[in-house]
Length: 323
Image 1: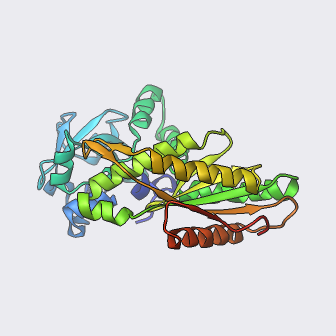
Image 2: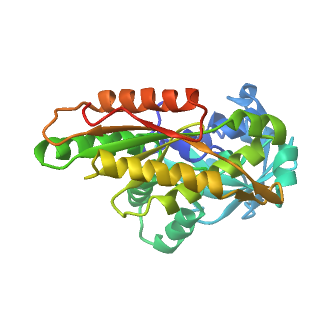
């Protein structure tokens, strides 16, 4: 099945999305929904696995889905005590259900096998689309609006809310281009949450997710300049891009981050207590006039991070003034 360009990022942005064809046969599912229902339901009739809860339809048909517009829709999975709430977008012979699970508590999440990271924070987008929808809006208008909003959502990490790896790659390339045209330095920090695997193994992935959210929040508070940007680089690693910051300034910030985490325990509601979390930091800096490639800067910061972890963690290592 060939999906429209606006649907290419659905697995990333809508882990519970569902796509059916004009015969209402399931053609695609988001990764979280696929994990819950099993890949074997691909090609099966929608009615065999999902009950339509709201709005009530006289007949579950493709034509009925086309008439829904931007109405809030609720589906009930037949094999699980789980409802999905979202919207239906019909385009080019396919109906796309873009939804989120309706859950009451972390215990409910855990019991269903759903992680916090499965649930993107895009409710505001759905609300905005309802307000923007007008009687004369065509499907093309809706797809165009959806595509623009998805482009914005695609650059945010669903769990922590900071920039994701895609945005980091884009902005690193842009800042390196500006750096080579100007007389300004460019610094990069790579951070790793120390012994994160122990947190997951001891307390479970829900607590691990909450820990990463708290780390991102505290990191944004410690990185105070508006032009400095925080990203989730991957897993328990974060990146901080520092345009116009020289080696000394980057070292000062790295020290402030290390000390900040070492002296301020994170409060995790999932544990109902404070938890001490430390970070290790690797630092690289490109000086004015240096033709530095993004991969070179990344590689040096990663090497410095590796050295910091081997030096006992909860510290920072910089690679020097020239890269």
